[in-house]
Image (tube, rainbow, N blue to C red; front, top):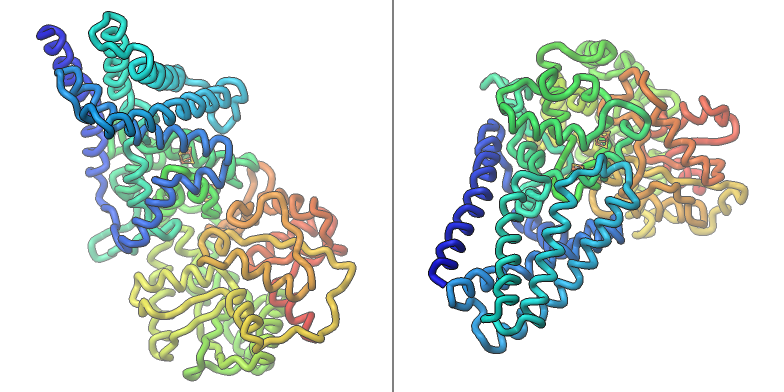
Length: 616
Ligand code: SF4
Ligand code: SF4
């Protein structure tokens, strides 16, 4: 008995060492990064932790079968903590759970979960080894070993509880030892495998920023210019790289990857992980990842939305773009729009007087303490096609008696500059706009462009008052209809032949506020008298139009064009009109309908135009 206890002690110490040593090594690699964690809005973070980690709701909703299997395994693991402690304490002749009702209740509940875990692991193993989805990548021995360990643990637990009830028998001792040694072997394997996510993912999810793709301002005075070395990336990126469970959801949903580009967000995270393990001072581009992938990301956020373990794959892309841009290494087409922004404060090179003329000619009120500032954005101010959307929105505002005005001297928000990595240029544009907004005393802003909404919201990190409200026009129109300030009743019914499909913009459906998915649909329903059609990938799972992340200014030479992929999907609904809620989407989808030879019979219009149609 004494010998047995000595062997057990040595085995426990060895198991702990083999677990702690690699975990500590990885923590030090995370600590080597210079941009630390941001821990704000604790209440919201706790709420997200409860729903995504403890209740596993995100993963179950997104993929009901695989998600439920994972959830069963996760809950089983949690339940196993007290009985595992008890198992080892029994090895020294004691008990952690006692001998009474508590033991009966806990062990019985865990027995039910053990059966659930067996079902869960078997289901996942069948998926991995029989169904073999491409996103999971090559079969690895490690995954099979882990599945086997878990099955052994569950079976030996049930045998211990219900079959070998006399602990003094040889069979019971052998079963006890198999269970104990499997736990210790599993512990040693965890930090060396993707199963480290069992330990890290609750922390990664808790520490993930509440805003998608949130990057911190750079302090140029402290010579911060963006990420060049791995250690320049944020601590959360390093933590995320070690947390990746290689599930491939980001791989499945990335528009760049799925249209044949080199970028694969799963590979990106695994390459970063390998780089951090090797040397955090190594270069990101060249030594860790290929440059080409950086300039293929539309920042659509599909990867981040899908990731079950709290990784934000967009942040390292944006941080590295800043490093590359600071070194002047950007695609040549970006230099053109950077130059336009510097000279004319809009990326399309329109002369400012053109916007003034449009504003004067159409009698837009100048902002003067009105309730709302209508932030027009560059396309509404300059682009002849998109000006129709602006005029439709103006008609709605006027008809509903909304107190609003515009600032004719607004400059580009700097969205594309920031997403392209030109933080310096973005900061200049942001500062000029913030000064103008502050001087005008603006408190509420409405924009028809979700990219403007997002970017103006980011101004709060640059000095704009935190209480300034910034919303997308869908929210305001929805509110005007709900409060009956805008009534579509008694208006002529919509075109009966219209078959309208709605395309969710990424910057509304994934970056937006709660309600930004439903409100455009409600508005369309009001305007059409019926629900809009839904494409295959819709709402939070919407597929990008290909424009975001400054990609509208890039040359898309590799693979299929993203806008074509999306537009084909929209047209598969048999729609003859496509409703959008973003100027970039409108351009990209319209271009693709033209490329597909459908431009003459498929209209691409903003939700505001559908509402305005119903008013006239
Ligand atoms: S943000 Fe979109 S394009 Fe970029 S890596 Fe993620 S899924 Fe791919
Ligand atoms: S980054 Fe997230 S979504 Fe992508 S493979 Fe890893 S765990 Fe899965």
